[in-house]
Length: 504
Length: 108
Image 1 (cartoon, rainbow over the protein chains, first blue to last red):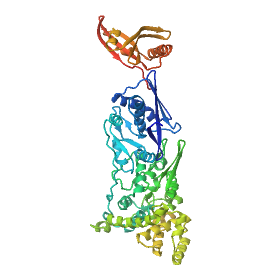
Image 2 (image 1 turned 120 degrees about the vertical axis):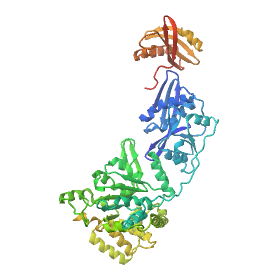
Image 3 (image 1 turned 45 degrees about the horizontal axis):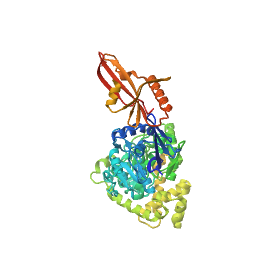
Image 4 (image 1 turned 90 degrees about the vertical axis):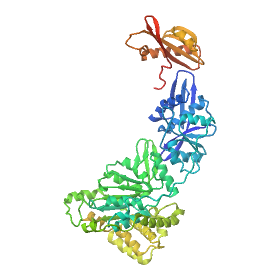
């Protein structure tokens, strides 16, 4: 077997691409076969120039075959593998061990950063291959355990390394640091809104979706941003998942343990949100997986975008199918949606008068479909603070984010302990089967629930969601069983005043 | 003049002014293990165009075809390329000689 391999991305997975090179006599000509895309075909120019920079001049007919032939190859990261493949035929470079080469070549032989280095590292670990990566990708690859990788600055250095003339620096494995997230804004900086803070704490603890409804300026956006500061850091397993997704889009975060927080503007298309495109990229919902997806001005999103969210919100993953193939991206998001109660924004406001016509209200309401609202666990109304409150509450305004984060962390620990053997991380992911089996309710609580259900007419899913939220509230209390007050609190977030405007 | 130059830089001259049905080749030489088909262009000084610009796509096609026929006739399977030597004259005196290697475009 040829020992030079490159790779191409299929979803978040790397697929090994064997690079075969044949050089025969004749007039100079390079051809690449094996379903290359435009970037791979253009690699010919880059590879030729880069090889010339290290003193290898190409002659004759150069045929490059990228196997397997039926998978479309994309991206510039095959440059390096092609260059090494050619050099091993013509330039006196020998690759002894099977190795994976990724990198985009500059005309002068330098190596540029590529996207997909982490999937490549996983592939290399799985196959037991050596991995050669551009120096700029070293930071993300160093987090992958068990990979034997080398940092390459330029083609010349790599060839010298393969000829045993110099030794390239190896990528050292390093642990991601557990730096506490910087709370900005801090909960202590937000005046009032203690109900909202409590709901955010529950959302953070159980990874529940939340909808914030409030008039303009009431602090919806501020609260959503503060949520970032109380989320626990990513665990190792989650980190790998997030890292993989970030790497496939070429996005490297500064603080690695920090949960993703993706704020999406309402002009986003369904493809941008859910993933897709001709070359199949993950969308915002996948990039926000294990973190927060913040949708401000929720009803302003086009209807098909919102409806497209239904399935991933329920399943925690999204299957993107296109002509070029179908891939599954993770989508375990904590969705924070924020909206005004009506087009003018003042419906239900104690001071300001709502000026919307009934038909305008009707239209606005119709944008939020029942199925979408049914998938949001916590519905919350954010009241505007009174002038006295705004002025008076100086200095300390309740707990700081760090204190809340500590409680959230403890609640998550309880959940991890309980659910880890089923392979789930948080209460919001509990499958129906386990939910019914693991939650014991006293007759008193059952009676209350029945009463409540008759009153508010919840769907079956609504009930499961309430039970999940109650479980989280109980975990925050460090309580073994779900008690009446937990259920009551969970119910209050579901059918409280927040959505009263929907029904009037 | 061009042959003198080629010998000086170490090429071995194989033939001169070879012509066939599809065109003619000014010089055939060998550079190591590679055969070089050389097109010589001569211009007097003061011409509007430098000599290297006078080889257009039509001429390139002819050169390639002629060279291919030459190699196929001799069952030559090694490397070959097409070079251009541009000679600029100043009152029949040599003023400059320029050698451009590999004028074909290998990447379409």
